[in-house]
Length: 489
Image (tube, rainbow, N blue to C red; front, top):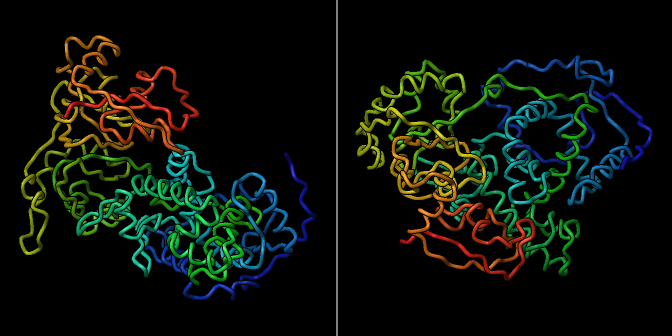
């Protein structure tokens, strides 16, 4: 449905702005944008966008367009009809639109470029949890799309998790590893947290506020406002640092859809133009040493891997993921024997005990092996079934102690050890079931087959479909009992 916009009264204004003074210097959103602007690999990076090609409005290169309030209101009304969020227009929202469109327009151009790297990851995760796609803009408000962002309150990463909430949602945080900076794991945790908050409040604006200041503070504000569940009616009762949170989210929705109307275009920094790939290692490793062996830029390797707080990849119970520019992956594979032996513990700086135990382990692939890259939604059980191998062998070949895997992870498959009896997917399933016992899962509100499968190690969506032939995969009936085959412990 098309919506007729009001006639535009366009004004070209200098970089001084009208409403910016309503955003105080200590505003958390402003702080994150300023933090992004200080990064060396962005600050000194040349513009790479051909603005002349994209500029269909006929603006002068340095023009800063502005519009009357009625035009902003109408544009937000058009967006509002396409989203479950209430994209209200008011002075607070206008202040943040001006922040992104005028005062920090260069950083906005860079965030538009960074979005091309991160938004596909966010969109896939949001779709998996059946959440609104507009939630991807939350990371822009939270971190300005900088994975290593850290707030004064010690919230960290793209989704700005506090340490307690991060651990509650399964993110490892210790002296060496901070999974709040892991793009995939933190995004998955953020989706689960937002889903839970929406179930609590039944309202997306309140869920967003609770994501920022916690459900307790939102409940307190609701009580002080007489029990109303309207965000704008509890606005004055929220903590000061949270009040700008929803207005900023609305402004980001606007600016990411109307950037060209403000003469702002995506700037892809050279650092982020790399196609990033992942490598799995089962041994401790120093990122600086890795960069030296690969003849790569040390700062670049560290910036791609903020999850390793001290630049040390410790030996973990599961394979550790390292992010590399795709151009370096071939060199890594060729030099892995040297890389795996490169770590020499510095006895003056204590490292995890597991790091020493595995320091000389080499994981050079054996002849007759191949690699499987884990796709979203795949479980260890499904991969084992499709490749006609056992879960036990998969764990052994990949030094896995559990069944947790993630998209992008590389798994070694030994073609020479395929069970003779596993001649088809059905036969593989049958042989596997000899060591299986059956339990029943009662469907809860919000359950999906994918979510249920994640609760049972080694169980895949395909397993659930096979054992529950009559199940409606799109709309699970609350209270229905699903048969689940789990390995005998």
